Amino acid sequence: MKGYTGRRNGWKWGLLVLAGALILAGVLGFRWWSGQSRTVAMSDQERETYGLYRVTPPDGEGPALTAEGLRTVCTPETTEVLGDDGKPLELVRYTSEVLKDWLPDCRALREIAGVSNGSLYIGYETNAGLEVRLTYGAEGLTEQLVYDLETDTLYQPMTGEKTIHFRHGN
Image (cartoon, rainbow, N blue to C red; front, top):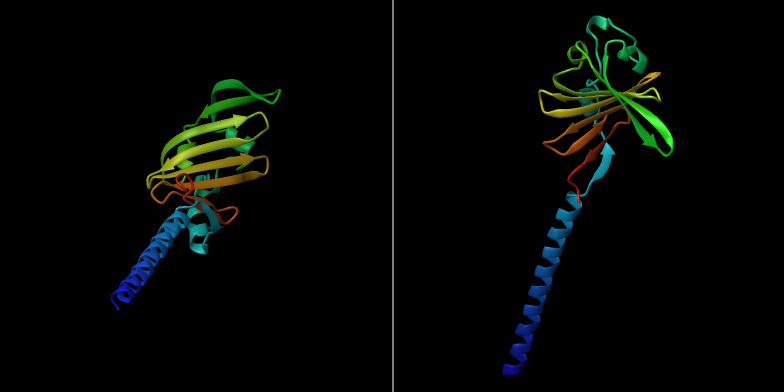
């Protein structure tokens, strides 16, 4: 009888170890999955909130909201030529006295840069700590990215997508 009880306790011990291993694997699997960078649809509220971060002249005044139109309120600061697979690409960095006032919640205008293909890139930081990157082309706004450092989420209002764990995902 004594031998039988030992096997029975060994069997229970084995089940307990197996259950513990399964629970641990589940917790680790969930933590791995939840830390993965993934792209999902933005809610309507998010599209409305983050879609506001674009050049907005007061009362609709100002130039056309195209790369060329926005260049009229900018002053060229530096020009450099970058290699682009054998085709040189001219990069012009600008400053602007008025553009900062046309950017919603702008705390600091980080960059205004244009390239010879016609695009104009604007980067700024909001008072709320968001990083905003705008790209304007011949037809107007072509790309709008709003990054929230606190939640590590990149919002793309024009496509209606957001990427969770954008910079720090597994």
